[in-house]
Structures are given as structure tokens and as C-alpha cells.
Length: 157
Image 1 (tube, rainbow, N blue to C red):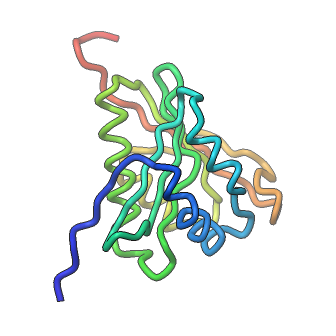
Image 2: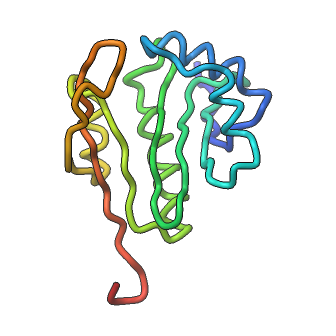
């Protein structure tokens, strides 16, 4: 049976219940609903997306545009759909939209043991640049800091 093509769009307040459900299913220390609500406030830097399929939110990406840098804070796909390419789709949409704004780089942190995510980021041009020791308070695990440079248009930069 053919399913509808997933829709990637900006995060809205009505998405928060579904986003929080996915967050709680995926992460050992989930963000609070208040944290997600802050993304919808008029803070001027939130650059956040949801992936909707069949009328339901099945994934999301939270990021921030600050000056000429994109920082990816959180990306998740419903557990039953992980490995299906939806995380890749979200990442590509976010990176494409950010590139259109003229950002020069993107950064993120990822658990050093999250090999699947690290491989995804590397396929999209991210490279490791540093470690944040004991970054994750739930396990004391280190974070790998990754950076992606965007080509600058208009010649020399």
C-alpha cells in the first residue's frame, strides 16, 4: 500500500504533544514541554522543523540560527520509523534552508556512542572538531562536537 509522502514544515504549537511523545520515547533525558514551547516564542533564532506523515508528526529537528551559524540542538524520529531515512530528510531540509540564508557553518553535539547519527552527519559534510567531556548528565558520556562548513557564494570570503 502506498503511503503519503511525508511533509516537512516548520514547528507549530499544535505539534508539541506529538513532539514531546517522540522525545520521551527516544531520549533517556527528554526535553521538557516548556523547552519546546520556548522554541515557539519570539526568540528570533529558532529554526525548527517537523516531519508529518499521514497527519501525524513522526519526527522533528530543533535548531537555531545565530548570526551566520546554524546549531542543531535536537533531532528525533519516532522509534518505529528509525532507519527509514526520515532523519536524513529532516537534516537535509534544515541544512538546505540554512544554506539559503547564507550561513557559513553548522555545529552540533552527538553522543560518542551514537554511531548511526555520526555516520549520518559525516555523510552530510560534518567533521569532528572537539569533545565535550561528560556532556550528557544522564550517563556522563562524552559528546563529539561536529562542524560543517558551507561554501560561501560570491567569491572570496
